[in-house]
Figure 1 (cartoon, rainbow, N blue to C red):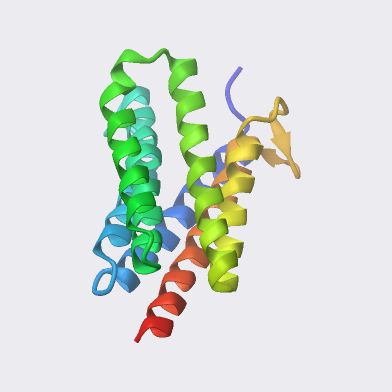
Figure 2 (tube, rainbow, N blue to C red):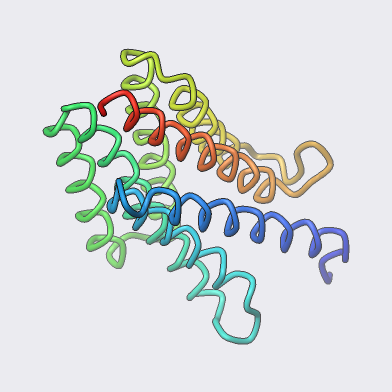
Length: 192
């Protein structure tokens, strides 16, 4: 059965919004946070691959989402931890993402899915913990929204709030990326 036109528009719009928010975040953080900017750019690339039908295969789209999750998100968390002086956690998160990226070819599709969702939740929780201890409200919202996206992706339902589940997850990722960009900006102002 072919997908409904509403679902196609919803999917395209959620990818577009995530890409635009991530691009804005990458440009906004490029001077102060190169790691975070690179993480946001990986999200932009994954969204762009999904929006360009005919230029990529389904496997390319899955690979782009995998890289954005296991390398892009740890880059975001790396910078947040680094700015707050938690260098060991920053290095551990980034190292774990790199190991997952390399090992991804040896995992089954279900294994990659679980590993990606685990990475998303670890990043969300560590950002949330640092944000709570530094009283960074945007960081709390960013970590919460990233966590919501990870938890929603594990639900058995196909639709949430009248939208495909994957689209709701992308909307949550877009909101989390926006809040996280603001959190980085706020954190940098506190340290200056």
